[in-house]
Length: 293
Image (tube, rainbow, N blue to C red):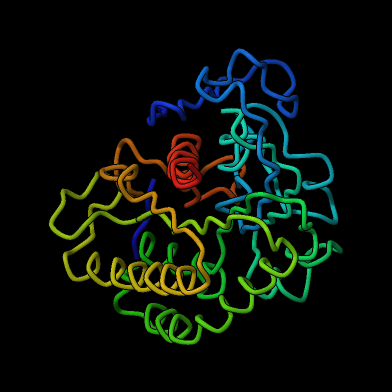
C-alpha cells in the first residue's frame, strides 16, 4: 500500500492573467487589469457549467468560496479563482451565470440539480454568448480512480476496469448534457474543456511523490484518462462545440512532480486533493481563453 506525503504560468499575449488578490475576492477586477487589446470590447456574457475542476475546488487562496456555495447544505464550492473567473479577469468575458458545482455529473447538468439548486443547464439563459463546460469525470468515478493510482497499486484492483466500462457508456450522457446546454443557451459559443493529465507521461521522469510507480501502472492510468478525454472531445465536436485542451500547460506538472499543478494529499481544504491548484487553474483558464478567441 502506498502512502504519500506554486509559481503561476501565464501565456497568450492577449490573455495574460493577473491573479494576485486585491481587495475583496468577489469584487470585479480593476479596469487596469484588462489587456489594452481587449479593453475597448464589451465583455461577452458567459456561463459556467462544470464539476469541481471548473468550480475551482480548493481555490480559497484569495478569499472564501462564493456566497451560498459553502454552507451546511450547499458544497458547490465556487471559487473566485476558478478557470472561468480567471478568464473573466482579462475583460474578455463576464461570468453572468456560474452553475458549476463540485461533484457534478452529466445528470446534474440535465435533470437533477445538487444541493437544492436547479440542473446546471436550466440556470443558463438565451442571452449568453459563451458557455464553458467541464463535465464527465465524475461519471467515471474520477476521484476514486485518482486516489487509487496515487495511493495504492491500482493496476492490481478492479477500479481502472470499472472506470473504462463507465467510459464506454459515457457518450450518450455527454450528448444529453450538451443538448441541454444548447437548448438553454441557443446562441452561445460552447467551449468544452478536457481534463489535464494527472500522471506523468509514459517514459517521462517520475517525480518524488510517486516513487513506487512502474511503467505499466503509469501506462494504464494514462490510458484511462486519454480515453475519457477522447470521448469528451469527440462528442463535443459532434455538437459543433470547440474543445480546449490544457495538456500543454501541464507538461512536467503532474501529481508526482515537485512543481505539481495539483493539490497534494494533506491539502487544505481536504476536498481539494488531486484538484488543480492555483497554477493549474491558470493553465485551464489560458486553454479556455485561447479557445474562446
